[in-house]
Amino acid sequence: MLTRSEFMVLLGALGAAGAPAVARAAQPPWYPMPAPLPLGKGRALVVSGAGARGSYEAGAIKWLFRNVSAGQPFDLICGTSAGAINAAFAAQGTVESIQRNEQLWKGMPSAGILTLQPQIQDVVDGAKQLQESAKHGYPAKLRYIGRAKNEFQKAGPPADLIKLMGVMDDAGIETLVHRYPLELSSLQSSLFVTATNVTNMTSDSFYQFVGPTAASSEARFLERTTTRREMLTSEGTPPLTVQHNSHHALTQDNFSDAVVASAAMPGVFQPVAIKRRETGDTNMYVDGGVANNTPVELAIDAGATDITVILATALGELPAQPTTLPGMLQAVNAIMQQRILQNDVTLAVAKNLLARHHDWSGLNPAMQAFLESLRDGEWTPIKLRVIRPRKPLKLSVLGFNDQAGIDAAFDIGYQDAQHEWVYSAAG
Image (cartoon, rainbow, N blue to C red; front, side):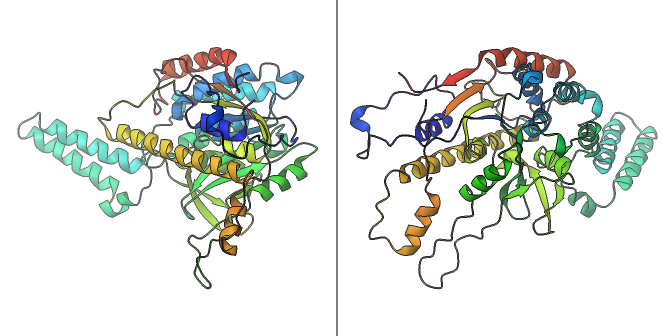
């Protein structure tokens, strides 16, 4: 089993074949580590953001839930972006819900997910007419120019086009998700859905704990993730940052909206407005993958010790050198996610060490309070299982219209899930 620090270091380098044993000479002075505290055997499934490659994840889930009628394979399921869609259906934990998830992904090409906003389509149609006009001489040219003018007028003034925050029509994804109703009362596993709050500039999660220990599990989770106390440099100094509550209860009213928001790729789909029950405020949300593409830390904070992660990228896979705007956005997002993960690993290791060695004498009270808020008060071995493609999928992240690619990715996910990689300490 991996210790928490070894696990988080491993998470930062998932491409490694395994976790190397720590040389005795390199061990810190507070070794040996204390015995782990018993936290139970929480099983969690974490489904990452993947775009159209969510079909690969759906195939893996079909295998993982092959015996769901005999019992739930996971106590907790966390999902981001496309992974949020898969997580929502998996958390319902029935043969029918897993079948509906498969139907959703395999029916995606016919659902019009990549249908342009009407105004954007008008601009595209106008540009096509201008291109056609260049192929003809007068007077035919004037006919095409007139058609282009009509299309541009239909699109409206440029000021209105700039206000569009997504080039694709949201009707496709919303209709598809709502075709298979998500009922909060039907959840058989606890569920976390992440989304990026562009109103408060935070990475948020929407959660629902279920089962006989739901109340105590929720209380423990909220205690562990309580907003950190502000670090003050001196008396009267304002806080370094403004802290917001970033964990919100799922309700029947916001369930579908949270899932759609988690999958709302910035620039591709419009942000989703969600009313927060705690404050009554309406915040705007986009893709959860912007700030938390693989929410493993949420699963740990919720008490999971045996975690299965589904990724849709192969070992060492890099995005192709961008030659288009969508390609550039994808590459930039990949770089951003790598950097976020590196920072998360650094913080997680620091928190883990603070749990074992915390002689803070000499520090001012404000700094001691800040370090105490960072410190993980518990330590436990964690097992990590990883399901991912053995080689890069031919399906692109934006390949929602690629029927053959979606079907093939689903089948590959189903096969790969039968041969997971398990990371544990040597010996």
